[in-house]
Image (cartoon, rainbow, N blue to C red; front, side, top):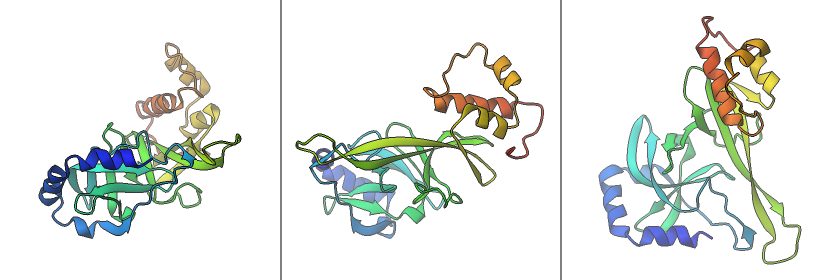
Length: 229
């Protein structure tokens, strides 16, 4: 399963090695030293976000950004993975060192702390769907479930996403439309009036709907002072 990713990178090891020397002169301090183990071949799917292929991304550590770093994001374990050109191996990056990373498709993942009671918080990486005073964060994760039918695979990766509003260090989980409206101090009437041209379905377009809802609150004449319980 991970062979495709390794093969893609191994084709140009010298170019990656040059990038490491140029962009990450102290890279050894950033990795855990542990090798990343691919999932067994009898597991259907993969634990990564969007793709199993390494793509060049941006890694931000201690407020310093490193570009063109080969990255994968394991959303089952909540690990950031890179490729070491000398050892031709997938390597774990120390999660506590990572402030933010941007994947090849432009997805921005940032480290947020303070949501420890949430079972999937783990290392604290959330996709930033809306980056404003009120943020919309998305926690993508995969879980392994037994395959119902007998065959080549024994388990499969199933992906889920949970949504959070974040403001001034506070997380609020959002799963219902009425709850989201109340948290932001809005009324159903003003939301309906503002969204009358927008036919977004909350459940099918949750990310876009919640982003628009937060923007509506931020555009209000009333200053946002915190979530309403």
